[in-house]
Length: 501
Image (cartoon, rainbow, N blue to C red; front, top):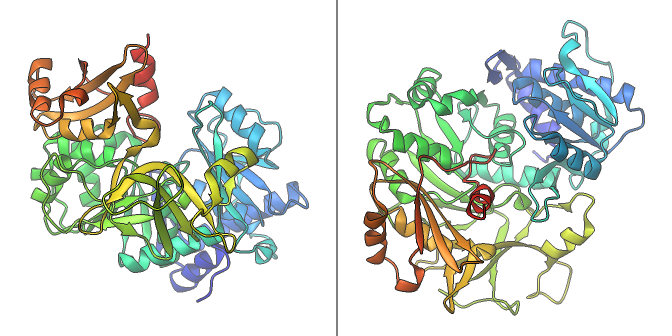
């Protein structure tokens, strides 16, 4: 089946599974027929109130829910593209996003009253008993290279960057990931990622493509591991695609040993480094599950490499990020733009259908990160420069080293802060850690959460046997918890601000 836009995935699943649950949240269930009907009604409202709007952005200001997914599909049905916003973001950040996006409308559900400088469509009064419009055909004019969504990420200057992803980007990824990992109409996803975070893309579009079911896990359950594990078991969830922080929290709770997850088949993770220490806890109690480490920033449609965990790793060892996903190529470049040799570290760059269209409304940032492949002088071939450092190990596997901006120069040595963190995670008691460089004091600072509690001296003694002297932290901070950002990752910016205050 040749697919030009994601609505065709939805329509095929409606045809095959009209009465099957598509998405389930705390408020109820939308079958595929329900999802399609609600999406068409939303599309009708957009078309009526934003007359002539085609291939324009429509923002979505809603809590994660089944209705939110219907809003996404409704916007695409209307011939436009969506941009999810975090309702918990400060007004200042929302205003910055709207200033970049300049949407023709904002779709909301009335639960979070706010004023917007454009048409506002409140779905709280949507009449589901009425018939959808007779003709919703604007989506038929969508090209696969047209935008599907704009996902805003943080920018180093404080200005959010809108990663623009096309239908072809998502279709290419969905075709590969569902085939590679055997997703089907029998798959039941347990969704963890917020919809304004690119990790949700795998859940959403694998579900719609395969006629699978997606259960939106209530956010509060991630604070109560016992309830979370009960939820997974009672709802027969068989597939997880979570950020490592969520999996780490479960591993650290000590409750996996007593959990009852007989149908859990696949655990995929992406978004940050997964420490082998916590992964080994999962593998100890659930050894027959398929574990997959996915790597990729939002600019490459969620993931561009993968590694199926197929051997044992020591707790302190790094986990490979593997090999390129289908229809994707990875090149590692040195500072002169030349390909590195095996085992040499360089910047990981990506090309293929996964590469985003760029940053919405920001040509300067786009040109800085999306560039002509320096190894190809014969025709236009755009690569995305990830800013991540990597190398190929002796087994031909890609190994993630860290961010270029996490690489520091200390005592004349180039140091990857991620290597210090990996060594610290080798401690059995280490639950979370983060290394920060204090530029003014030329000192490596290591923030740690341990259980049972360790002293700074005990942690330092461990690291002294694992790292060269010049990589040892000058100060170790013992914390009750480390701050997490909205995506569930350790908030390095918050720690850096704490360091300088």
